[in-house]
Length: 130
Image 1 (cartoon, rainbow, N blue to C red):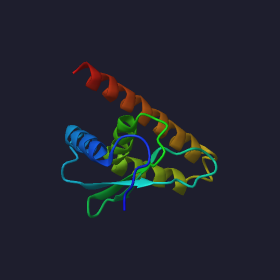
Image 2 (tube, helix red, strand yellow):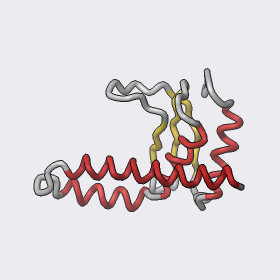
Image 3 (cartoon, one colour):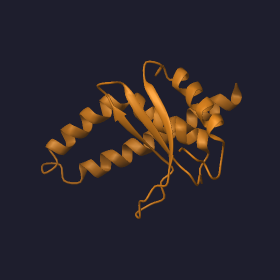
Image 4 (cartoon, one colour):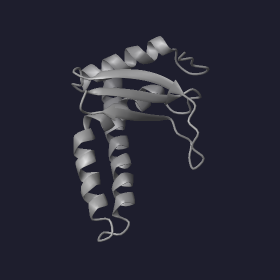
């Protein structure tokens, strides 16, 4: 069962997910929301997305103990989905040449996260003005 202990109710999160799925033109995707307890020890994780590109399915994972704006977490993870094919291609190229470009994979991942965060902030601000 998908139980949320703190933060917004599941029904509200699903409504937000539907709103942003439509806004980003991801309607052909089957996207499910799942609340989880992330077990990472290296940092506190608020969300993640698992993608099945071939079948256009995704699972958007969110922490059961939110510490960030949950709508922004949904937007952020959907932007990752929006950029998925580009991201996977670029990451494969970097990993293939990783020995040649030492450390570029981490630089790429950090840059991707920072870019997605900036786009998320833009969308969030624009949404508040509507």
